[in-house]
Image: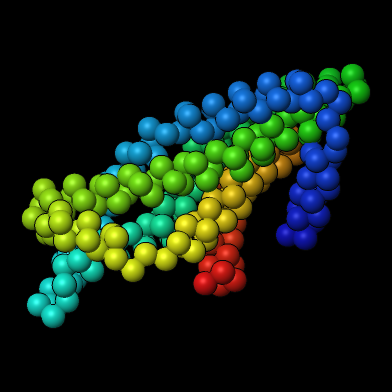
Length: 244
C-alpha cells in the first residue's frame, strides 16, 4: 500500500512539472498562492516563534544552575536550537496544519464536484494548473517564514529572559554573538526548502485523489496533515544526518 501511494505520488509530480500551457496564467496564480501561504501565515509564525524562544530561555536557564557555566551560554544554546531545529521544524508542522489542510480540502472539493474533470476535458493540465503554483509558492515562501521564525524566537528569548530575570540582556546578546557558525543557517534553509515542498505536495496528492463526497474530503484533509507531519519529521532527521 505504501509503495502504491508513493508511486502514484511520483506520477502525479511528473504531471505537475510538465511545461505549462501559458506561463502568464501560472505566474498570476503563483503570486496569489505566495500571498495565501506566506503572507497569510506570518502572524501565526511570529506569535508561536516568539513564545517558543521565551520558553526555551526559561527552560535553559532552569537547567543551567551551575556557577561554573556562564549565563552567556543560554543565548548561545537558544540561538543554535532555534536555527537548527525549532525554527524550521515547528514552523513546518504548524504550516502543515494550516496550509496543508486548506490545500487538501480545496483540491478535494474540486475533485468531488467534478471541476478537475472539467479542466481535463478542456485540455488543461489540471495537476500543473492546480498544484504547481502552490509548490513554487511553498518552496519560495517557506525559507522566508523560517528566517522570520528564527529572528522572532531569538528576540522572544531576549524578552523572556529579561522579563523573568533568568539572564541579563547583555549576557544573552553576548551569547548570541559568540561562536556563531554560519553553516547552521544553510542547514535551516535547506530544511525549509524541503519542508515547503512536502507541505504543498503531500496534501495536494491526497486532495487530488479523493473519491466520494464531503466526508471523504474531510478525511483526506486529516490524513494529509498526519502523513505530512510524519514526512516532515523523517526529512528533518535525514537532512540533519546528511548535513551535520
